[in-house]
Amino acid sequence: MNRSIQHNHETGLVPGAQDFGINLLLLLPGRVSSHHTQRAYYRWIDRYLVDMAGLRPTTSGDERLSRMASLPIQPLQRSMSAPQLRAWLGMLVEEGHGKQGVQQARAAIVTLTSLLAESEWLDEYTAATMRNVRIPNAPDGQRQGRWLSPSQIRTLMNAARAIATSRNQELRNHVVVTMLCTMALRRDELASAKWGDLSLQNDRPVMRVRGKGRKLAIIDLPKPVLRALDSWRVAVTPNALHPPAESPLVRRLWKGGRVSRNGLTPDGIWLVINEASTFAGLGHVAPHDLRRSVAGALQEAGVPIDKISQLLRHSNVAVTERYLSKLPQRNEGAVIMSDVLGLDDDAW
Image (cartoon, rainbow, N blue to C red):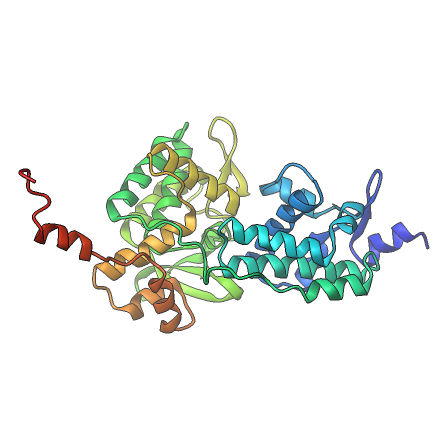
Protein backbone atom coordinates (compact mmCIF):
# COMPACT_ATOMS: atom_id res chain seq x y z
CA MET A 1 0.00 0.00 0.00
CA ASN A 2 1.24 3.50 -0.84
CA ARG A 3 2.62 5.26 2.30
CA SER A 4 0.45 8.35 1.86
CA ILE A 5 -2.70 6.30 1.46
CA GLN A 6 -1.80 4.15 4.46
CA HIS A 7 -1.39 7.16 6.73
CA ASN A 8 -4.54 8.73 5.36
CA HIS A 9 -6.67 5.78 6.46
CA GLU A 10 -4.90 4.57 9.57
CA THR A 11 -3.23 7.49 11.29
CA GLY A 12 -5.08 10.61 10.23
CA LEU A 13 -2.38 11.84 7.87
CA VAL A 14 -3.48 13.36 4.60
CA PRO A 15 -1.33 14.18 1.54
CA GLY A 16 -1.09 17.84 0.61
CA ALA A 17 -0.02 19.40 -2.64
CA GLN A 18 3.69 19.47 -1.70
CA ASP A 19 3.81 17.68 1.61
CA PHE A 20 1.94 15.34 3.91
CA GLY A 21 -0.40 16.79 6.48
CA ILE A 22 -1.43 15.36 9.84
CA ASN A 23 -5.13 15.58 10.68
CA LEU A 24 -5.06 16.64 14.32
CA LEU A 25 -8.85 16.98 14.39
CA LEU A 26 -9.01 13.22 13.89
CA LEU A 27 -6.17 12.21 16.18
CA LEU A 28 -6.41 14.51 19.21
CA PRO A 29 -9.85 13.38 20.54
CA GLY A 30 -8.29 9.97 21.17
CA ARG A 31 -5.92 11.62 23.66
CA VAL A 32 -8.01 14.51 24.99
CA SER A 33 -11.75 14.06 25.52
CA SER A 34 -12.58 17.58 26.73
CA HIS A 35 -13.61 19.91 23.91
CA HIS A 36 -12.40 22.82 26.02
CA THR A 37 -8.91 21.31 26.28
CA GLN A 38 -8.88 20.36 22.59
CA ARG A 39 -9.60 23.97 21.63
CA ALA A 40 -6.84 25.18 23.95
CA TYR A 41 -4.37 22.68 22.46
CA TYR A 42 -5.24 23.85 18.93
CA ARG A 43 -4.54 27.43 20.00
CA TRP A 44 -1.15 26.59 21.52
CA ILE A 45 -0.10 24.40 18.59
CA ASP A 46 -1.07 27.14 16.17
CA ARG A 47 1.00 29.60 18.20
CA TYR A 48 3.99 27.21 18.29
CA LEU A 49 3.94 26.73 14.53
CA VAL A 50 3.89 30.48 13.99
CA ASP A 51 6.69 31.17 16.50
CA MET A 52 8.97 28.20 15.82
CA ALA A 53 8.10 26.88 12.34
CA GLY A 54 7.50 30.20 10.61
CA LEU A 55 3.91 29.54 9.58
CA ARG A 56 1.98 32.75 9.06
CA PRO A 57 -0.37 34.08 10.19
CA THR A 58 -1.90 32.97 13.47
CA THR A 59 -5.40 31.66 12.89
CA SER A 60 -8.71 31.50 14.70
CA GLY A 61 -12.15 29.97 14.25
CA ASP A 62 -12.71 27.95 11.08
CA GLU A 63 -9.29 28.91 9.70
CA ARG A 64 -7.60 27.35 12.74
CA LEU A 65 -9.65 24.17 12.41
CA SER A 66 -8.69 24.02 8.74
CA ARG A 67 -5.01 24.30 9.66
CA MET A 68 -5.36 21.61 12.35
CA ALA A 69 -6.99 19.30 9.81
CA SER A 70 -3.83 19.29 7.70
CA LEU A 71 -0.74 20.31 9.66
CA PRO A 72 2.26 20.25 7.31
CA ILE A 73 4.71 17.53 8.28
CA GLN A 74 8.00 19.09 7.14
CA PRO A 75 7.62 22.35 9.17
CA LEU A 76 6.55 20.24 12.15
CA GLN A 77 9.62 18.04 11.90
CA ARG A 78 11.94 21.06 11.60
CA SER A 79 10.48 22.73 14.69
CA MET A 80 10.33 19.69 16.97
CA SER A 81 13.29 19.55 19.34
CA ALA A 82 13.86 19.94 23.07
CA PRO A 83 15.88 23.19 22.73
CA GLN A 84 13.19 24.78 20.57
CA LEU A 85 10.41 23.78 22.96
CA ARG A 86 12.43 25.03 25.95
CA ALA A 87 13.07 28.38 24.20
CA TRP A 88 9.39 28.74 23.31
CA LEU A 89 8.21 28.09 26.84
CA GLY A 90 10.70 30.69 28.07
CA MET A 91 9.25 33.14 25.57
CA LEU A 92 5.76 32.56 26.99
CA VAL A 93 7.01 33.20 30.52
CA GLU A 94 8.67 36.44 29.37
CA GLU A 95 5.33 37.52 27.89
CA GLY A 96 3.71 37.13 31.31
CA HIS A 97 1.84 33.85 30.87
CA GLY A 98 1.13 32.19 34.20
CA LYS A 99 2.25 28.76 35.31
CA GLN A 100 -1.03 27.09 34.42
CA GLY A 101 -1.03 28.49 30.88
CA VAL A 102 2.61 27.52 30.24
CA GLN A 103 1.96 24.01 31.56
CA GLN A 104 -0.96 23.67 29.16
CA ALA A 105 1.18 24.97 26.27
CA ARG A 106 3.85 22.37 27.06
CA ALA A 107 1.23 19.59 27.29
CA ALA A 108 -0.15 20.56 23.86
CA ILE A 109 3.23 20.32 22.14
CA VAL A 110 4.28 17.14 23.98
CA THR A 111 0.99 15.51 22.96
CA LEU A 112 1.61 16.53 19.36
CA THR A 113 5.13 15.06 19.42
CA SER A 114 3.76 11.81 20.80
CA LEU A 115 1.21 11.59 17.99
CA LEU A 116 3.93 12.29 15.43
CA ALA A 117 6.13 9.57 16.93
CA GLU A 118 3.28 7.05 16.86
CA SER A 119 2.77 7.84 13.18
CA GLU A 120 6.53 7.41 12.56
CA TRP A 121 6.98 10.99 11.43
CA LEU A 122 9.20 11.79 14.43
CA ASP A 123 11.84 9.59 16.03
CA GLU A 124 11.13 8.34 19.53
CA TYR A 125 14.37 9.79 20.92
CA THR A 126 13.31 13.34 19.96
CA ALA A 127 9.84 12.77 21.38
CA ALA A 128 11.32 11.49 24.65
CA THR A 129 13.70 14.45 25.04
CA MET A 130 10.80 16.85 24.46
CA ARG A 131 8.75 15.07 27.12
CA ASN A 132 11.61 15.73 29.55
CA VAL A 133 11.47 19.50 29.01
CA ARG A 134 10.15 21.25 32.11
CA ILE A 135 8.59 24.67 32.17
CA PRO A 136 10.76 27.57 33.40
CA ASN A 137 9.81 29.45 36.53
CA ALA A 138 6.52 31.23 35.95
CA PRO A 139 4.05 33.05 38.20
CA ASP A 140 1.57 30.67 39.81
CA GLY A 141 -1.93 30.46 38.42
CA GLN A 142 -3.49 32.20 35.45
CA ARG A 143 -3.17 35.72 34.22
CA GLN A 144 -4.87 38.10 36.58
CA GLY A 145 -7.29 39.24 33.92
CA ARG A 146 -9.97 41.85 34.50
CA TRP A 147 -12.48 42.26 37.32
CA LEU A 148 -15.31 44.51 36.19
CA SER A 149 -17.57 46.38 38.58
CA PRO A 150 -21.36 45.98 38.25
CA SER A 151 -21.58 49.40 36.57
CA GLN A 152 -18.91 48.36 34.04
CA ILE A 153 -20.79 45.13 33.37
CA ARG A 154 -23.96 47.08 32.63
CA THR A 155 -21.99 49.40 30.33
CA LEU A 156 -20.65 46.37 28.47
CA MET A 157 -24.13 44.88 28.13
CA ASN A 158 -25.47 48.10 26.64
CA ALA A 159 -22.51 48.29 24.27
CA ALA A 160 -23.14 44.73 22.99
CA ARG A 161 -26.54 45.89 21.77
CA ALA A 162 -25.23 49.22 20.45
CA ILE A 163 -22.65 47.60 18.13
CA ALA A 164 -25.33 45.54 16.37
CA THR A 165 -26.04 46.37 12.73
CA SER A 166 -29.40 44.56 12.62
CA ARG A 167 -32.28 43.79 14.95
CA ASN A 168 -31.41 40.09 15.00
CA GLN A 169 -27.80 40.82 15.88
CA GLU A 170 -28.97 43.04 18.71
CA LEU A 171 -31.19 40.25 20.06
CA ARG A 172 -28.43 37.65 19.71
CA ASN A 173 -25.80 39.84 21.36
CA HIS A 174 -28.19 40.62 24.20
CA VAL A 175 -28.67 36.91 24.87
CA VAL A 176 -24.91 36.32 24.85
CA VAL A 177 -23.95 39.09 27.27
CA THR A 178 -26.93 38.61 29.59
CA MET A 179 -26.18 34.91 30.03
CA LEU A 180 -22.44 35.46 30.48
CA CYS A 181 -22.93 38.32 32.93
CA THR A 182 -25.49 36.61 35.17
CA MET A 183 -24.92 32.86 34.84
CA ALA A 184 -21.08 32.90 34.82
CA LEU A 185 -20.98 30.62 31.79
CA ARG A 186 -17.74 29.77 30.03
CA ARG A 187 -17.85 30.67 26.35
CA ASP A 188 -17.55 26.97 25.39
CA GLU A 189 -20.57 26.20 27.54
CA LEU A 190 -22.66 28.88 25.87
CA ALA A 191 -21.48 27.89 22.39
CA SER A 192 -22.48 24.24 22.98
CA ALA A 193 -25.89 25.05 24.51
CA LYS A 194 -29.00 23.73 22.72
CA TRP A 195 -32.60 24.88 22.87
CA GLY A 196 -33.43 21.49 24.35
CA ASP A 197 -31.25 22.34 27.36
CA LEU A 198 -33.96 24.75 28.53
CA SER A 199 -36.74 23.28 30.64
CA LEU A 200 -38.99 23.68 33.67
CA GLN A 201 -38.04 21.81 36.84
CA ASN A 202 -40.38 22.10 39.81
CA ASP A 203 -41.90 25.19 38.12
CA ARG A 204 -38.42 26.75 37.87
CA PRO A 205 -37.01 27.66 34.44
CA VAL A 206 -33.56 26.10 34.26
CA MET A 207 -30.80 25.32 31.78
CA ARG A 208 -28.62 22.23 31.56
CA VAL A 209 -24.98 23.24 31.16
CA ARG A 210 -22.25 21.02 29.72
CA GLY A 211 -19.17 22.03 31.68
CA LYS A 212 -15.50 21.10 31.65
CA GLY A 213 -14.79 17.40 31.69
CA ARG A 214 -18.30 16.79 30.30
CA LYS A 215 -19.82 17.53 33.68
CA LEU A 216 -23.50 18.43 33.60
CA ALA A 217 -25.09 21.03 35.85
CA ILE A 218 -28.49 22.69 36.18
CA ILE A 219 -28.65 26.49 36.55
CA ASP A 220 -31.76 28.56 37.28
CA LEU A 221 -32.55 31.10 34.57
CA PRO A 222 -33.01 34.68 35.84
CA LYS A 223 -35.89 36.74 34.45
CA PRO A 224 -33.65 39.02 32.30
CA VAL A 225 -32.26 35.93 30.56
CA LEU A 226 -35.77 34.56 29.99
CA ARG A 227 -36.89 37.85 28.44
CA ALA A 228 -33.83 37.94 26.19
CA LEU A 229 -34.38 34.32 25.12
CA ASP A 230 -38.08 34.90 24.37
CA SER A 231 -37.26 37.76 21.99
CA TRP A 232 -34.42 35.79 20.38
CA ARG A 233 -36.63 32.70 19.98
CA VAL A 234 -39.03 34.65 17.76
CA ALA A 235 -36.12 35.71 15.54
CA VAL A 236 -34.77 32.16 15.30
CA THR A 237 -38.09 30.50 14.39
CA PRO A 238 -40.62 33.17 13.37
CA ASN A 239 -43.01 30.52 12.03
CA ALA A 240 -42.84 28.03 14.90
CA LEU A 241 -43.38 28.08 18.65
CA HIS A 242 -40.06 26.47 19.54
CA PRO A 243 -36.76 25.86 17.73
CA PRO A 244 -35.71 22.21 17.36
CA ALA A 245 -34.37 20.83 20.63
CA GLU A 246 -30.97 19.90 19.17
CA SER A 247 -30.44 23.23 17.39
CA PRO A 248 -27.84 25.71 18.76
CA LEU A 249 -29.11 28.23 21.29
CA VAL A 250 -26.98 31.10 19.95
CA ARG A 251 -26.43 31.31 16.21
CA ARG A 252 -24.27 32.88 13.60
CA LEU A 253 -25.85 35.56 11.45
CA TRP A 254 -25.65 36.10 7.72
CA LYS A 255 -25.07 39.53 6.24
CA GLY A 256 -28.25 41.52 6.64
CA GLY A 257 -29.06 39.82 9.92
CA ARG A 258 -30.59 36.56 8.71
CA VAL A 259 -30.21 33.84 11.35
CA SER A 260 -28.01 30.89 10.36
CA ARG A 261 -28.63 27.29 11.33
CA ASN A 262 -25.05 27.08 12.58
CA GLY A 263 -24.16 27.89 16.15
CA LEU A 264 -21.98 30.79 17.22
CA THR A 265 -18.49 29.44 17.95
CA PRO A 266 -16.47 30.15 21.13
CA ASP A 267 -14.30 32.47 19.03
CA GLY A 268 -17.45 34.22 17.80
CA ILE A 269 -18.53 34.82 21.40
CA TRP A 270 -15.06 36.19 22.14
CA LEU A 271 -15.42 38.64 19.25
CA VAL A 272 -18.81 39.88 20.50
CA ILE A 273 -17.36 40.65 23.94
CA ASN A 274 -14.17 42.14 22.55
CA GLU A 275 -16.00 44.47 20.16
CA ALA A 276 -18.47 45.52 22.86
CA SER A 277 -15.73 46.25 25.40
CA THR A 278 -13.78 48.27 22.84
CA PHE A 279 -16.90 50.25 21.92
CA ALA A 280 -17.62 50.89 25.61
CA GLY A 281 -14.08 52.17 26.21
CA LEU A 282 -13.33 49.40 28.73
CA GLY A 283 -10.19 48.16 27.01
CA HIS A 284 -9.68 44.46 26.46
CA VAL A 285 -12.27 42.27 28.18
CA ALA A 286 -12.41 38.51 27.57
CA PRO A 287 -15.49 36.32 28.16
CA HIS A 288 -13.78 34.66 31.14
CA ASP A 289 -13.34 38.11 32.71
CA LEU A 290 -17.14 38.24 32.96
CA ARG A 291 -17.21 34.91 34.80
CA ARG A 292 -14.55 36.28 37.13
CA SER A 293 -16.52 39.50 37.58
CA VAL A 294 -19.72 37.62 38.48
CA ALA A 295 -17.83 35.72 41.18
CA GLY A 296 -16.27 38.92 42.55
CA ALA A 297 -19.55 40.84 42.57
CA LEU A 298 -21.33 38.04 44.41
CA GLN A 299 -18.54 37.85 46.97
CA GLU A 300 -18.68 41.60 47.62
CA ALA A 301 -22.46 41.38 47.92
CA GLY A 302 -22.05 38.91 50.78
CA VAL A 303 -23.31 35.83 48.93
CA PRO A 304 -22.18 32.64 50.74
CA ILE A 305 -19.24 30.98 49.08
CA ASP A 306 -21.10 27.69 48.68
CA LYS A 307 -23.66 29.41 46.43
CA ILE A 308 -20.90 31.04 44.40
CA SER A 309 -19.17 27.67 44.09
CA GLN A 310 -22.39 26.05 42.91
CA LEU A 311 -22.90 28.71 40.23
CA LEU A 312 -19.28 28.41 39.02
CA ARG A 313 -19.69 24.61 39.02
CA HIS A 314 -16.42 23.99 40.82
CA SER A 315 -15.74 20.52 42.18
CA ASN A 316 -15.63 21.83 45.76
CA VAL A 317 -15.61 25.05 47.78
CA ALA A 318 -11.81 24.94 48.18
CA VAL A 319 -11.45 25.44 44.41
CA THR A 320 -13.75 28.47 44.61
CA GLU A 321 -11.74 29.90 47.50
CA ARG A 322 -8.56 29.67 45.43
CA TYR A 323 -10.40 31.18 42.46
CA LEU A 324 -11.61 34.16 44.50
CA SER A 325 -8.22 34.62 46.13
CA LYS A 326 -6.73 35.41 42.72
CA LEU A 327 -9.03 38.42 42.32
CA PRO A 328 -7.42 41.75 43.23
CA GLN A 329 -8.54 42.20 46.82
CA ARG A 330 -9.14 45.58 48.41
CA ASN A 331 -6.05 46.99 50.11
CA GLU A 332 -7.10 50.45 51.25
CA GLY A 333 -4.46 51.22 53.86
CA ALA A 334 -2.78 53.86 51.70
CA VAL A 335 -6.12 55.55 50.99
CA ILE A 336 -6.95 55.62 54.70
CA MET A 337 -3.49 57.00 55.53
CA SER A 338 -3.88 59.84 53.05
CA ASP A 339 -7.14 60.74 54.79
CA VAL A 340 -5.43 60.59 58.22
CA LEU A 341 -2.78 63.00 56.97
CA GLY A 342 -5.42 65.25 55.45
CA LEU A 343 -3.74 65.14 52.06
CA ASP A 344 -7.07 65.56 50.29
CA ASP A 345 -7.52 68.93 51.98
CA ASP A 346 -7.51 71.71 49.39
CA ALA A 347 -5.18 73.73 51.65
CA TRP A 348 -2.52 71.07 51.33
